[in-house]
Length: 442
Image 1: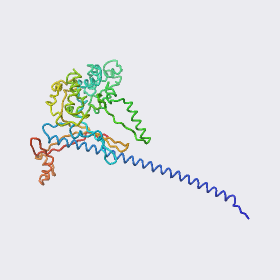
Image 2: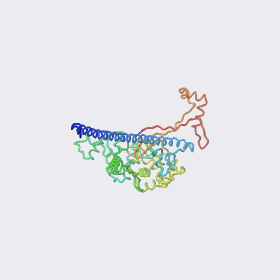
Image 3: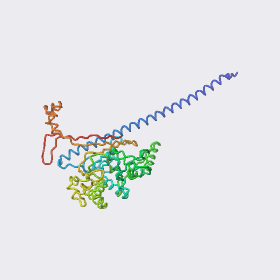
Image 4: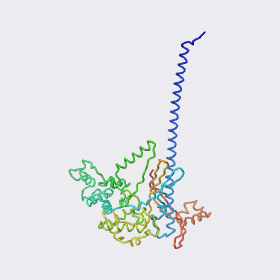
């Protein structure tokens, strides 16, 4: 005798089966989403870790650069306190570093250090109109444009409101007129000029792009539009999970460096002959010769670069080849130091001032971990601070100082940081190399 399950029992089993299948699907979706979320969070954590490591590597590079600068000034004084100098043979310039050693392996990443002498560049806040014009002529501006734009460079920063290009005409109206704006009469304030001069010192070299007549291609050394396209390609490759191929730019022989690499707004305005690029030397010699002979200025600059051993693009220079004084520079054929320092005066500034040692440097640290890159740039001032332990002002205000002297600890430190020159002179002064951070950019 055969029994058949009721119809509702069969339906119930089918419903249970469907519910189980749906439950399996839902649980699978939840598990998949959880796995994806875990994977995303893991990648984010890995990126954050790499960013932290890259940032730490960049800071480590900055610390190494500052240490090099401190050690260099102590070594210079030990060598000859009367003729201290800064050149590419110094430890801060890393003269023995080979091309393949630019990126230093550390842990799971690499760091890169670059120390540049800001006083080897032309200072926008001190260069006079003649130096500015010499610079523009070197960069292939024609005579009339070079004169006009050199005036604009000076008018941009000078405190007065009158233009150098046209006496009696306000700067803003004069340059707005050159850009096509028309005024009914001089001094008409009913319409705001489209061009304005801040009449204060340049704060960054990027402000050069706001000056009448300065072309971005000359300032950057490349077409900004093509550079934007390259950066967009790199970002897209990173977003797609691919490691971008970044090719380092190499300057081709015979090409001029972009303006942003030879100009600065920091420092005393003096130019260190030992670290000035060939372009800067050419500009100085050309201006010092009253803009008389550009080929002669080029030849003199090449002779100076050759005599000092390197322009940081060749072999490692020697300390014996560095210039220590104007007398050393005067030995170079074609260099007239007298004409250089006395004949460089012009509107918007004084005569050219030469130097052979520097105080202001930029230190750049780059940390890399995989495709993650962190860059830190600092502007520092380096000095050798000197203290007299017998100064009553110190002994009366610093209790720890007095205790150190009584206990002998101070004397020990004094011997540690005191230095002795070539001639054997010694004193009781305490000399401490000081690095002061003027600007920090991340």
